[in-house]
Image (tube, helix red, strand yellow):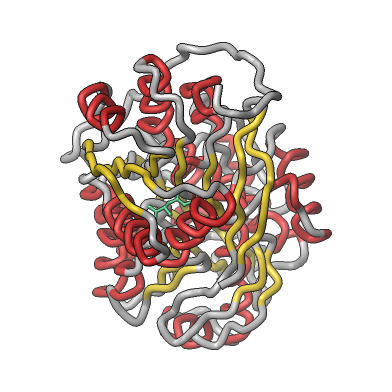
Length: 441
Ligand code: PHE
């Protein structure tokens, strides 16, 4: 469908990993079993005692693991664990990561965590930071905002993290960020694009572009390249990111003389979109802007196809997951989205990242991975720069980061603790995201 000749059918009908959002009132699950103080496997304890060889074993049996011989296990949820105990016996730098390793947006947390662990392994192999090894503790928030707040509290209060990486989803960065701000521990969101995230306070940073820019990028592309005059918007009203990005697109598209003929909405977790798409079909639009997350977008594409609504969909970075293609199948052919990074348009530095990631995990990273890797890299640079590893010093050093050469682009932290970055536009062709263009702010 959709104007692209090079389409081919794929396996369809597979369902997303919906398992999802377990009970919101349960505690954030500790996914790094090597750091679980009560249940740490014996072998890990032995390894720790060997490597650290000190009386601190009791305290850290936890951390247990394993310096250069970084432990990689392939757990069924696709996460891996890698931690490093300091040769100096307990003098390590602990950083926290919270993300959705399970649930409706599991790809977000998993890809980010893999990339962070790649960065941590690399820095440790190169001697660590300030003479210490870095240990990352990851907590699964299951894509739930109460869990995200719990996870950040625990990373700071129990794990004693000096800095936090996360979240991907803007709604969860808002929730976790409030906790980090209150505790005065710096947090870097790799990939939350809603403007409100860093407005939470002066300890909150990000290394990605913002949605007013991202929305304008797609609105301009729709007007200038696709020559659309009349489109629809379908937003997720339970998602701060989706709400903000829809507004940004609307403002930019109408400012350029385009018309939003109809607006519809859904709530994250919905599975039936036929009423909304039927209303959109009646409005005779040339395209539909769907700034949501991949699981729902995949189903929306399928439903549109079934209803004979044969126009391109357009979206943002929230589409970026292999499951999008699994769920949406050929219904997505000829659609477009904006993103942070296109693995098929890699620079020398990002090429190395893509191949290292592939070697370690057997798959290509998505934009999430690139940003997770860069968030970790920016944090390491700030820790080095601060000369010590206390939260306030790291925060101050983060405000000074300029021209950091990341795999997702060059990162300079501005006065709002945001990064001004370019965006890419990708087209979905042959069941894959293909690089189309780069747009600078
Ligand atoms: N930008 C999205 C948000 O703020 C999260 C996201 C980033 C999703 C990158 C996928 C890829 O909610």
